[in-house]
Image 1 (spheres, rainbow, N blue to C red):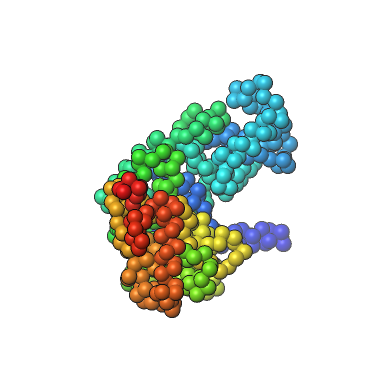
Image 2 (cartoon, rainbow, N blue to C red):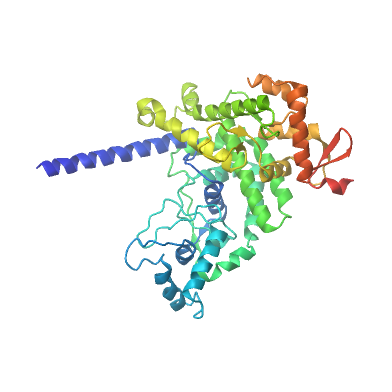
Length: 459
């Protein structure tokens, strides 16, 4: 009898846990439109590209070969090279002349090629149950639908884009980029791939809540400037090499998602992301950039409560809200903080990358800055630095001090004080020098900096 009571208690606890997770999922669907997991860009990219293409692949043997294992999970574990080697030869995926040491060396190369984001783990084959498997995708044929780390964030973005003309243009251009994205790296793993292409059914919004569709509709209106910028980005990058075009597309979509996190609450001021272009050499500017980051983090983390208080979460049931915010909502708050912190760093908006350093600041990485530039500059445009800075700030909330309006924006955001001559001018100068190094600007004369996609072509 005691054993039966214990089993019944365990069952009730499991049901309670499932109910809690389901309630949290529905709250996220109503308040955000996707699940805010700790997410890398490659996780987002998997779901985004699956939603664009509608196809997936099983990739069992690619996974078993490109994920080296030294300790077996069980007898005859096919992730172990000694077990895998004869199987690959028998299947004709590996030449008979390839020795075991050579296979081990090949596996290291495959792992470097298809797991350079650190997200391709032992998948749901032969007893393994990884939560996610996301290859560094060199072609459509490397898309696997087994990942869950994305929380349907990519599906949400595609859904939002599908609701406007600019967004539909982004989707069409993105599909063209994806269709021609096969690179030499794709050929490396070709013998390990499965011939069959499987359909991928987008679970959005069924795995979230009916409110996720409503949130997508609201986002389509709120994110109009950023969607228009994505349209320009896609137009500009379609002529690039496929590998570069695909990478820039994903970074651009990630930037869109970050701005969505900060702009989606009605009635709040526009965010200001103050970039420290002096890399800590000006302590006052670094402090203000850290304050800007803390402000953005707090805005996102507390957005659910603000939406609830202002009546924008009325469709979310009181029961779900109570369950999700049990114990004061600390778990919900922590999930949002971790999601923003990880994603902003990994998308190249914030530094330092180390998770051990709590005090982050805004500082654009080179590729992220290049993508933002390609989203606000037309193919044949040549604009002065202040105009370019205005566009970055107005579209992507990026503030560097290069525009006459930047000082007021920083003060109005409650960040500061910063002195124009001692702080903002040197920061703008460092930003200009970075643009020049990235071939996004030239200085034809003292005091004049001109920005363009290929500025040297205009001189």
